[in-house]
Length: 86
Figure 1: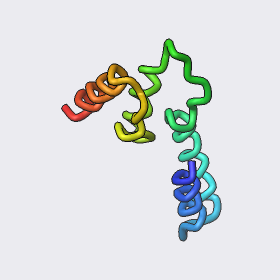
Figure 2 (figure 1 turned 90 degrees about the horizontal axis):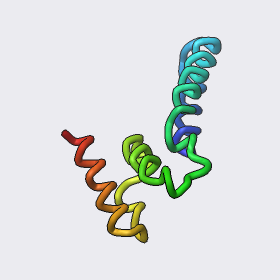
Figure 3 (figure 1 turned 30 degrees about the horizontal axis):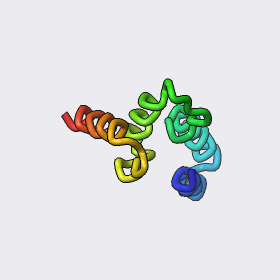
Figure 4 (figure 1 turned 180 degrees about the vertical axis):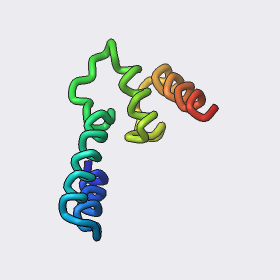
């Protein structure tokens, strides 16, 4: 979220007209609302793999962030990353 706020500040501090900056910021916020890193608030065991795949896909987390998870989950995450790189 800190990264997003920094990017929003850059939009607001841009050199264009105030109305253009406002609408650009609104568009960006609406797009970011759909990001896994912003949406996740309740991860259940039954959807954990799906959520991890989304977080990896959106570059919210990395494989290093999964330290402490089971090898099963880390293996799943590595396979998800491998599919993205193809």
